[in-house]
Amino acid sequence: MRPGFILEEEGHEVEEEYDFDIEPEDHFGTALDTYEGAEETFRDSWMEFDEVSFWDDQECFIQLLVEKSDLKSLFRVICEKYHINMANLRGWGSYEQKAVMARMFRTMERKGKTPVLFECGDHDPPGLAIANTLRDHFKNYELFTGWDPKNLVVDRIGLTYEFIQENGLSWIDGLVTASDQDLADPKHKMYKANTYNIQGYIEEYGARKVEANALVVVPDEGRQMLEDAILGYVGDNAYEVWQEKIVGKRGEIRELIESHMKSGDGEDIED
Image 1 (cartoon, rainbow, N blue to C red):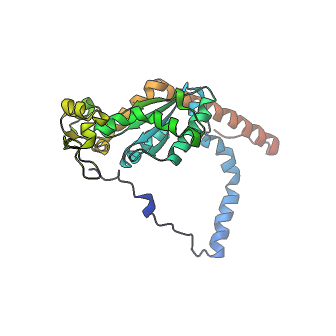
Image 2: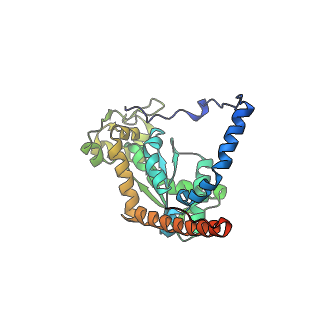
Image 3: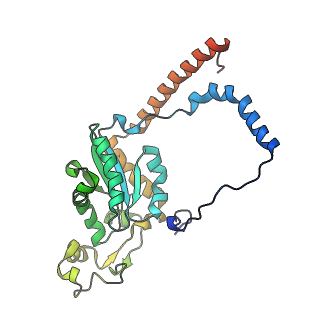
């Protein structure tokens, strides 16, 4: 596994408190630099503006659930680019997680957007089945979240058999669960009940699986897979159109700054 894709367990983080010594002269110097550079900062502030909603011109609103935390770091650059909320499903998720996502879906649905939920999970019987049950989960949580997912589109992305084979991802023999039970065992109650279509899965793919974080072995292909899925909903030029809108807004802000500076001290903004 390549380095750089493993996230620290949040519960293990050390919360550090600020406790440093700064000499009065140093604080004064920093404050003076800020004061003397304030005019230049104000003149150039238009270049920093990017407060334009990417989703304002879209007909849908996408959020993403991933099965493994490693995928959050893998996909983060794409999610930041398209302003997509992302969370680690880790099994079936939680009430709180669903409530946060439901609130965002409800807000955007009221603006006329179709709610779309991407799910990137393991290639195993539960992983293939989870996308089919997520809408039911949101429906079961409706009393808690206050949102009816009747219009929710759930789209499973990521590990298809074709993607696995084309990119040479490694299969793991067996269908052993986190509780060390083998779903491929004919004596297992879930095998007998054919839960998640286990028997059909084994017939088609064998008693083997690929976990979702196998995508970190092919990061470029994994990110491209996600971006292609996004573009399938928003269109190939959506990002460029959004950038052009930002440029237009920056021009408006620059004109406002220029007008203010002319009325204030008679100076033009230099190009």
